[in-house]
Figure 1 (tube, rainbow, N blue to C red):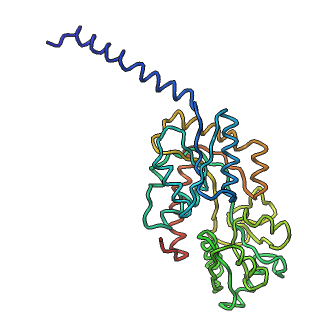
Figure 2: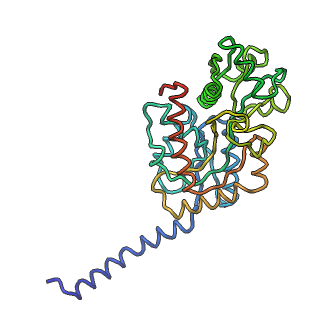
Figure 3: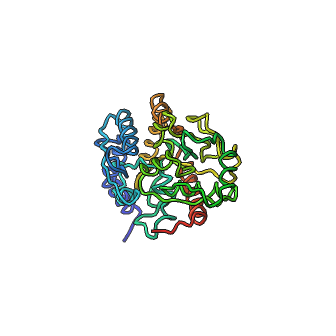
Length: 328
């Protein structure tokens, strides 16, 4: 017969048997991290993205006092690394510092099948920085503004051409063309080197490039920027007009970096990572590091990042239709 005394004894015994486990779990979370953290990089060693991942990973190591080891998993435009993080153990010891705009937001529009859900297979920690592409012409070009370039392209019709190399570059060009009803012809490139050579020689009228990649050419005067693809000017590139300012309606194509961990990572660990990375994001050397590659720091929080990801994922569905991008 189950009496009140028996029930109380059973409950006390169960509580006693569970308390070491719950105490240990709480302690592990409170003391996180107790060992090395693995930071997955979606691109090859030595690339610009790899440099950024290593920079932020080193900053995290300084705050936590634990090693943060970068592991490169390049391939499939970041999908290999992204899937590896989604499948990793959700214990806070695998983190993903990545260009979320391309590895998560655009992925559903560019690939027929993904081995992960960009929204639900991750805990979204915070944003780090944001940048944009730029509408550029050769440094020797007579065009010093978007209206001047546009007038020339209208006159030339389909006798003028532009280069494209990546989906954001193509999307930005299509938005520009539609805004002014241009008939300029696209020329696709697999690598930026040949594209830039054709731009320098005048075979191409313009090109939309990410600012990080062409920062050196901008400083040397080999390329002239006419506008950025963000609606407003970047703080890190204040001399370049925003798209809205030069009359390119509907353009706000941005690139942004963020931090993610596998879904079901304990919230106390996520909260710690959010606080640490937001502290890192605004440190003077981090601001300078980003400014050197025409990128603005963008501290945020988990909710801000998730809403940004949802908004940008929806925007990429529209971009893909606009640019006639067929999922691979």
